[in-house]
Amino acid sequence: QIEININGQKFKVSSKLNILEACRKVGFEIEALCYHPSLGPVGTCKCCIVDVKSVSKQSFQRACACATELWEGMEIKTDSPKVREQLMSAVADLRKKQKNRNLLSKMVGIEKVNNSNHLMEEYIKNGEKRFKKSKNGKKQKKKVIVADENDTMLDNLIERVSNKFIDTTNLAIQVDHTKCIDCTRCIAACSNIQGMDIYSYDPPTTMNDFNSAESLMPAFNTKGKFLGDTLCISCGQCSLYCPSGAITEIDHTQKLDAVMKSKKKLVVVGMAPSARISMSEIFKLAPGSLTTGQCVHLLRLLGFNQVFDVQFAADLTIMEEGTELLHRMNDKENSVLPMFTSCCPGWVNLVEKKYPEIIPHLSSCKSPQQMFGSVIKNYYAKRLNLDPKDIYCVTVMPCTAKKKELDRPQFRNPKTGVKEVDLCLTVREMGRMVAKRGIEFSELEEREFDNPLGFSTGAAQLFASSGGVMEAALRSAYWLQKGVEFPSIEFKPVRSRKGIKESVIDFDGTPLRLAVVSGGKNIHKFLETWGTSSFNYDFIEIMACPDGCIGGGGQPRSNLDINPLRKQVVYQNENKLPSRSSYQNPLVKRLYKDWLKKPYDKVALKYLHTTYEP
Ligand code: HC1
Ligand code: SF4
Image (cartoon, rainbow, N blue to C red; front, side, top):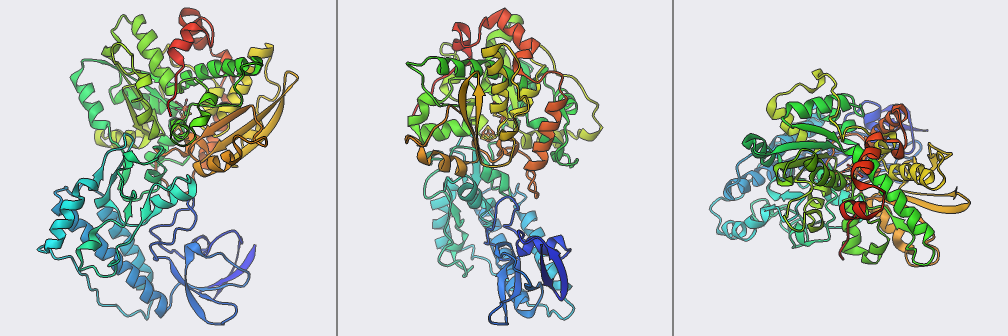
């Protein structure tokens, strides 16, 4: 704790906060367009400008509140003539950008379906509010300059760039430059959190001259390439922090509506482990609430014929992955260790694009999403006496990369071309579907999943959080090896929020060296020593998003640092479930009895395992 002075009042606050966070904490509202608690300082919009008394000069200097750390005795003013001047100039820039973006949308023939307008308006008003509150503040004459619609340069520019304005070349994420409000949060998410650097920010040289056509060029870009041609791993972190709808998942709600309306197919759905935890946020319920039963009810109301649980497939994945690990460990001559998990398509994309030498180390297990689809199309279809093409398999995921995963050629029947999973909706898309139908989520009673894919264990719920796959795999691998329960059923070393977690356990007399990594930047750091003798592990869980799927790119957007709340619910719920290890799942046992016979055996290898390509 340190003492600081804001507008003449003294406050004790944590030294870990920045000025913006400290001001908000003690009740001085400061607006900022680019700030987000999970992103660190971005400092682009300049709306959070304040005055700070410099220790040495004894005079006040302007500072971006979001990017300035506190010090003992710091003196801050949120309002002064200089602050007002700069804030007004930032707000005026926003107004000009807003006008120009609107003009651009009109000229490239895009309907104003976006909310960026409204959002920018809100920020502008809020930004001005701080200024207006001041008693002695003089109103500055607003001067909004708009690009000339008859400018031939503008025509040329639009022709040059219009085909790039909505970039749908990536199967998971789309970028609509006309909605961009230049906050640059996407760049911060992609670079600071994921270490991918797909986006860049190049304000036109004439940025301050809003009469110029060049100023219409979006300052944010994908370095002259279409998104689909970059190294983007489709994790969607950029879309999670984009406040204006410029970066979103590729929307599949209309496609699904059409399939449902045609009534030609049996439409089944499976819900991901973390979707039941975050869905409540879409409907403005308390962040981090478990709503499994309501989600099942909701999916039925939306028209799905069968509502299943992807967690069932997570238990199945553990049986396969745990057995695969034992095979690799016990095959001393050919063993390819360490083994890396393969359930996260963002991570698989990263391996294939950037670290192809890791491919032999990736578990051959399909992800739970794809095991789910495979069971539906290859087992459940037979049970119902249906042609697999007459079943439409949908998943509800916290993930954008899953949309792309389902399109991998490996996940189609090689003879018929029928996909295992036909369509994946993010939690956000679900929210849009519900809003369209006018369903009141909070009033829904709980319902149960359908069987035979409707039961799961606590281990499967753990998948939602970074460290969960590791913990779940250890519980069952230990049992598969020794026939008894893993002694540390709650394996705490992998439960923290650290980006890189390491541990060694005694696995039946053998030390098993473990690592759990989440978030792109941590992954790059972790792999720095790959291939050297200091990289010394047996089993590694990797998830591309920070904190794992609870922090997935398809999750509801939040203004909070929300992952800890979601994580808490994962562990609370896991603890309450009747069975906590995947090998105890009676429906999984039945599936082996009826169809697969043994884990990691002939039938299982054919239907539940896959290959990778650099
Ligand atoms: Fe995930 Fe998974 S945990 S990858 O984040 O292994 O998306 O929730 O569904 O497939 O089970 C995602 C979540 C999810 C898969 C499972
Ligand atoms: Fe998708 Fe989860 Fe991987 Fe993120 S961590 S890319 S949400 S599977």
